[in-house]
Amino acid sequence: MSRERVATLADVPAGTLRVVACDGRSLALANVEGALYAIDNVCTHDNGPLGEGTLRGARIVCPRHGAAFDARSGRVLTLPAVRSVRAYPVTVEGDTIYVDCDEGRLP
Image (cartoon, rainbow, N blue to C red):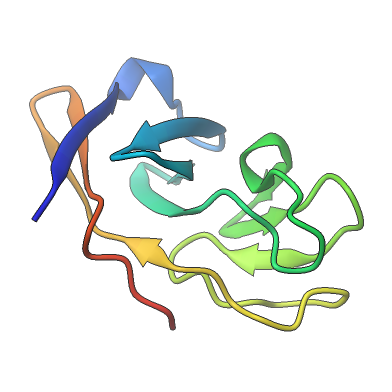
């Protein structure tokens, strides 16, 4: 398992997204009401950067064409995307955020 430190709690306040690197992968790290989630940072519609989109509740909206994904699971929620993205386990120790980079799962 490739568990990496990706950020601190201060880097990702509640209601925000941040792009992080984890073992060569680009991930969108979301803070949904104090709970942290990581999904692939690539929209399955046209490779848009999900981490540069907007977070509405637990919904990440791609900045390019508005496809939406569940930040908690990576499940696709709206067109134009039709495929989900992988979600990765996130743990917090103290104020440090870790992601298990090899444990990504499709919903």
